[in-house]
Length: 312
Ligand SMILES: Nc1ncnc2c1ncn2[C@@H]1O[C@H](COP(=O)(O)OP(=O)(O)OP(=O)(O)O)[C@@H](O)[C@H]1O
Ligand SMILES: [Mg+2]
Image (cartoon, rainbow, N blue to C red; front, top):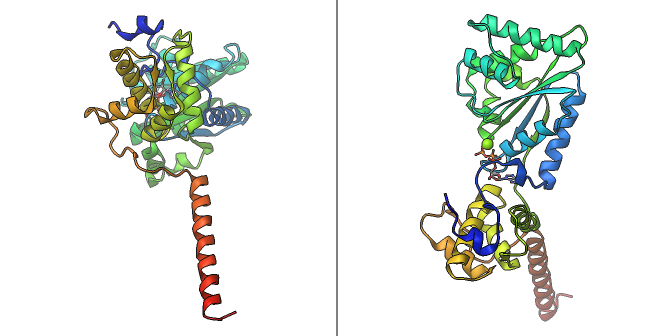
């Protein structure tokens, strides 16, 4: 598909695509913390990691970045992106991700194949990390299979590190008595946060530079603020909105996105932002200042009236 504005702004590729492309990875505080938690898991002898967060906050991006950051000589990695499958398909997918051709047919044969591989690799000094994205979609049978997989061990330690990534329903699901046995083994948990306003500004610029920008288009500070409020710091929504803004900018033959352009784009009916906050907006710091001022005024009033009626 030809993107109309690329040439106009001197861009090499689309800056605000929707695929979780590691090339565009921008490390914010929350992603840095999540990676630190995952690294901590690798240092442990057993256990699972759970990374959860709202839709579009960057879980899939994070899983790819983390796995690709691991030293290939020390770690084998497998990433299951969509776990809607039965147990056989699940085992076959893991084997395939590990670069093996499944020879077995039955569940037991596939399991044994995987177990043998893990033990052999362990003997050679390599560990294996399995990340399961969209884990809120796992069936109870697969949760049970994962538990059994996590039990594969040598006399010293468990040899498969497992990371579950999913939307908030996953946390609920893990409270289900049927899968609680697995929840009890989770030793590392991290909840991804949305980006701050400052991070949204840096993120937009970073993606533009990665897409080949030599300075155009630009996003004014007030435009970033509006994008931050409308997206509530969710990178997927930032991408959707920024992409539309750049397109609108191109349509108007301008070079800088301002708050009016963002407002116009938000007015368009098909933008999936429902409760866009367009009214006065208070950050937590603003709120504290305003409440303190109100408190001060009330105290002054009370003092004034007390004085008036001769109370003091
Ligand atoms: N740290 C980041 N750096 C660069 N892009 C990011 C980052 N985090 C998220 N994105 C972008 O935001 C969009 C959503 O990211 P991603 O698909 O990873 O989110 P998700 O949490 O897996 O979403 P879902 O809950 O729908 O599975 C993608 O376009 C991705 O490129
Ligand atoms: Mg995802």
